[in-house]
Image 1 (cartoon, rainbow, N blue to C red):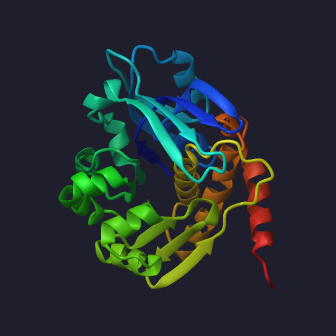
Image 2 (image 1 turned 180 degrees about the vertical axis):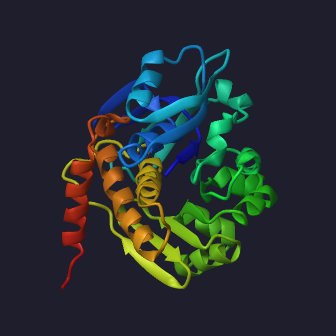
Length: 300
């Protein structure tokens, strides 16, 4: 099944207790696509600058990603620099240069508009709505957001949320969006805003899936090596949506299976800087960790 992602492709400068890496590949669409393409072909929509290497775009294409929707604009590529505390409990943004991303308006090639599965990564909700309006069919639509849009664009964001089938938020965003402190109440409150399905991410503590009246919990995959969590949430979304696109159906069983695939995909990201943990990732390695996670949680 066709899978479309609209988001960012960027350069990152990341520092953790395990070192610092400069001008490494980042961006929500990058992490999402590297994970999702293990399951199904991915169509990418983003913008990069004149400084972005063509070989990286070629690498996306070699992995089954259609990059016709990645615009190359005059100027520099979006850049973010951040540092994590030694215990990874906090992340400090040291510098953000929007560059060409500041004027980004998604441009969808006509053949992208009939995608069966659509993921709207974290961009301005006005742009997310523009993408929705450009679709020519009725795709399964999932979306992401952030605290900034909840604070500054809440009416527009609420309009978007009402049109989503699924939304992914972390615990802080869920509380801010709903005004509910208790996470179970926050998840149900978001469902009442429109999405039938809500994924509430809790980082190293796993993720909750709200679907209709049911509740499902996926723990984080236990790791012996944890190097850099940047992009883990976008990788989770890629594994999740890729699994759904491969199944071709959305129901209680496929959603729960997708939760586990999203979880194990994110675990590979956290073991390395940037997308290095995803470069040689195969479906066989994903299946191996999927089976391990099933075994870890089996109490029968």
